[in-house]
Image 1: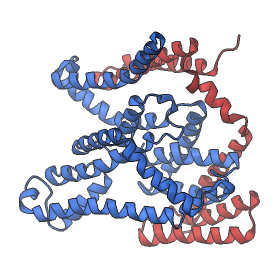
Image 2 (image 1 turned 60 degrees about the vertical axis):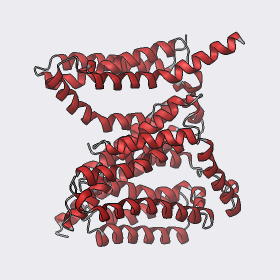
Image 3 (image 1 turned 90 degrees about the horizontal axis):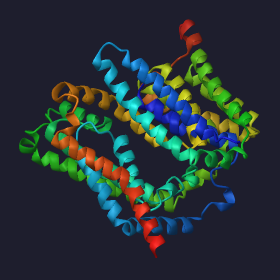
Image 4 (image 1 turned 90 degrees about the vertical axis):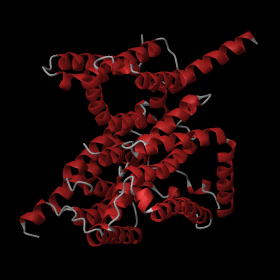
Length: 300
Length: 155
């Protein structure tokens, strides 16, 4: 199975079917914001980042580390950032109800990852995703060989790429501010679901088909729409499933490699042990924190 | 005694994982059995923990029961089946006549059956067909699936 049809089915397909079956728009027209109110909301949204600076920097650092590590995809990085934001939140059960931390963490991680991924692409010649593979292909076509020597021989070009990425993000942000704030594209969410289905469903299914030109992937997208809808209705975590899907192949490959090289107790090696301890700590951090708070409240 | 749906689900997952572990155990090669054994064991343990949690009635805000009852009352199962039938119809039609015929056909039939007016149906249909053709076939040269009938007719 390839990632795109699975993601399209689990998220876009499931949401679209749910919306269409409900028959109501995401936001009723009478509740849609005017241009001025929308700009106010955007400004408030920007301020939220400064109110969550700790989370912002933590997610950026995570994104940077994951970006340098070759092989960690964009999807995996954003889901891990979301999971750590949820784990470190005082009320993790409120995630999925529109908490701003759930937006800040994956977005800042995703943007930080892109810059770091460019570094690993240029310095090591290892692209971490399709967009960087495309950049690497363009460099190769232009006669530039990405790798350690590029930073010595093509320093000017390397910095052009870094600055291009940074400026691109800033210009993109300004563009979004004006298209959303002044042209008010968000009114699309007041559209009746029947129109959204007529527009989005064909695009989703073409998206599922186009990567491998295989009609089987269209069926995969439909099957995962059913699974996604079922998971949504039963309260199961769809990003967690996506993360499992993404990491499954790596897990199989590296588990076998570790077993071969270090034996069954490979996880007791210093680096593995340290990573294991960090994971267990992150897993237990939220519940322990709430347990301590409960005890503290009881004492008071 | 009313038993929560989530309890059945977690019992189902535990049984499924136990079967998967037993099957993986019988694989002759360690390379084949390593990953299923590790993953299924972890899922089995976590499902057992969650089952105990559900039986004891913990984590009330996010229990499966709550999320199911929250919106199931608003939308009937029939409407979900109807929407899935449209999606399956789209796929079947694509198999037969390809994307570029299915898209206008789907848009007209779907919108008309959902009560849209012709003055909205026609622009959406024309726009969608043009966009899909222009982006995928013309610009990206992506060769959208032509469909079984069109292929047999030599199109």
